[in-house]
Image (tube, rainbow, N blue to C red; front, side, top):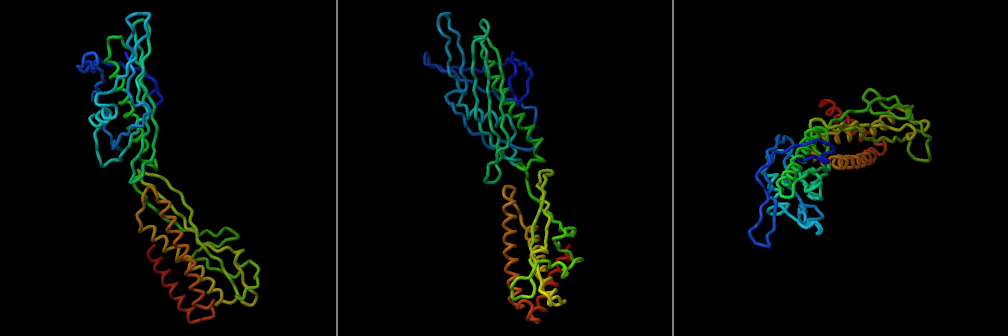
Length: 373
């Protein structure tokens, strides 16, 4: 009879039908060494979300997988504990077990298993009974491009009891422990595949524009709400210019994973801070206000260009935040360059011909973006 120990945090009871003895002894007389022949298992599931791409051995003790007890014939003598490994070695045997037991479909997510502990220990039981315990611990990782992402840890095992002259239970207990670990992995992957970012297959970005102007200190860009001189609330300093406006843009967003896709919902905010914008007395005319409005329009253009760059790009699951951040930084630099170019070419609104040229240029590009929305 075999009793379950910790297996993915649950307790229960499992009964096995004894198979042919899987213990084999090499024919080397007194120097013979035993090994365990790990049998292939028939798993009750077919993975739909993953395949095992690699199994790595991260055990601290790699001398043997089992330390089996042989009771001493003489009651006064100590029991003998002998190390016994899997036939062919622990790692090759477990790799073969998984390969033969679990279908491999490379179209699914590749998984790396790190075997942290795989150990069978035995202690004397009641009478002639020997008590044994299989301890199995592994960490599961997703091989995603050039990265390896940790997913989950598993620790489980099985306790068993056997007679001194019956060793078949040892292999069965190890095999059942391995089966349970793969069942746990399959269940975890099916549960997490659609909603866990570490398992996402792609990224989709969408944009919305923040145009609500309920904040008293900020004007958010809207075609229905151009700047007015009332928005210039700062005190003029000693600048030689008649007015100054300080527009900028930012992005807020949230993300959620649906059906294995990371949906990034970005909110674009093109804004002017009223308390950072000023105008001198006597300069409040329509022409000057248009010049300042065009500074605001330029930021809107840059924000629209940024959105198109993002929507046209293909992002990797492992670094989409960094990729979007890079495009944002590049657009921010573009905004500053365009603002400087605009002021230089219009001589800060003094060159009326250049101002009219910029007015047409900005209006044309704004219309092209609005027509695509």
